[in-house]
Image (cartoon, rainbow, N blue to C red; front, side, top):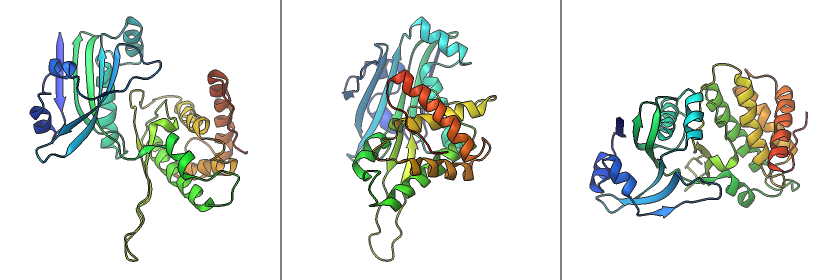
Length: 288
């Protein structure tokens, strides 16, 4: 039986103060908000927990626990090339790889697993809270309707910066495979405090890193899947056809190895249609 337990540097004292230094203690933890959602299988648990530090400041963290994954999940993990990694171990590895590549993503705090050979008994990962909110919730509130001329520059600026972020992620060799707007967080720009201050632009950050990987072959297929997920999940009443094409043009400027914006638009539209048929929603078209 192989057990592993790791804590990221700088977090040892906080977790020790709350007794979270061994696998059993983490799985016995019951204080916090249980984040159940429709479709979440019983062997998976998600918690939002708050741990006060010595200064009384609350550190908000997210705990994911995986207890005795079913055979189906075990086989999926093996087929994906992760026989030696648990479910939590995959996300822990992905988070650390992204951090090393300079891609903003949920911070890995701690991880533990209990394995018998390639068979996962249980595992957990503790992640830092990502500031801001998901683009899925932010866009309908903070952007005007797409058919209004108001704040056109604002919409274009957000599209441009998101394109740069996604292009940097793909240029580093990664794909997400679940890149819907619910998994991209935005921390809005901070206006200058005075005439001499500089406005901080919007920043973006990725969550749900379980399926992130670096494909060796057919990379464009996976890139198109990511771009189609973004296109599909962008609300049509807030993100117009012009912004969608602008996003792809800015993306290609930063990461042009997967074809022209026009070529990508056709591929993304086709994949978006397939997603829409599968999920039963309307396609968001990009002009070509």
